[in-house]
Amino acid sequence: MPKIEIFTQYGCPYCVRAVVLLKEKGANFTEINAPHGSVEREESIRRSGGKRTVPQIFIDNVSLGGCDDLMQLEREGKLDALLRGKQN
Image (cartoon, rainbow, N blue to C red; front, side, top):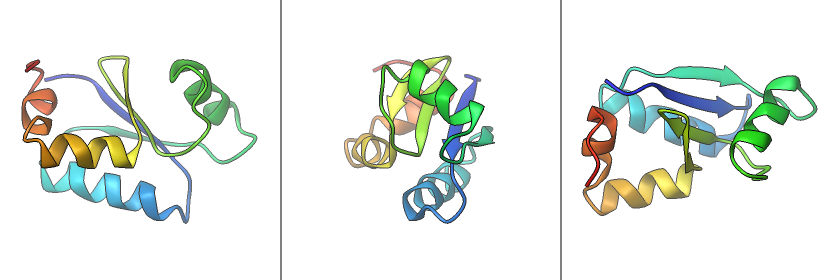
């Protein structure tokens, strides 16, 4: 199984939506609280190549993007393979 991390911020509807989808998929993931101005938020910005929004999702240390990117992968039928650690 791949290592899945999601950087979130309390009260963010996009974060909630992404977490719900990951849970519905049965993915094992680590949710990292990354409020504005925190060390965790700075880490997510650095690791994502400068993306400042939350959520930021990483699979095996590769930036997947945010909620919209996650939902797009789901619509395209590509998310399940990524969550299982298989590339399409």
